[in-house]
Length: 115
Length: 111
Image (cartoon, rainbow over all chains, first blue to last red):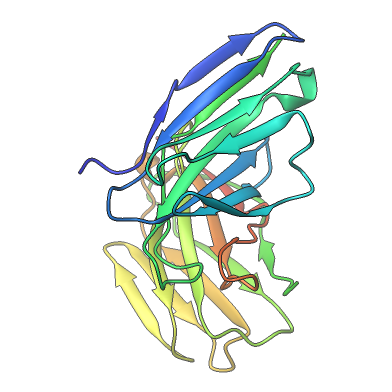
């Protein structure tokens, strides 16, 4: 296993377009998280999955954002009608069950630029 | 939310210098984690400190957890350009899953 994989690494899109990012977690990790990070800030929590169930969504996750983890393995994060304020690094992380807040492994992130 | 203040926010030093980064709080923590995030990459867990007074070493990096478990420090000896990155100290999750990251310390080590 090569760790948490995120694709694409970089995405440039025009304002108003939809974008989708993919995250492949470590295979034996049943917990998956999405974070967003803007310049000069630490990562901010967006949403959390345990297996295929989305158990928590931050208020940062507006109606234009949707995340799925259909089979409890990979996850996608879609942003509809992108805005310039969506420009950020989107980070995915996974962790094993039973380690609350511990043992996070992050991916390398997807850097989104909305022009 | 358990507030954790990290200082300094920015640090620019030359190769070979030593530095210390501090995390302080009025709250007692069961543990603290330190992450390093290199430019353009995701954070990587460096260490978890659990016991008050604990000292952990990772090559040139020394992590200390305060006796009262309210603070922690990271000391880097003879910094190298490869140490450049964002250093984040993070308390355990209150929610059981979401980690509450602060702004961290952005370190630049120049040759």
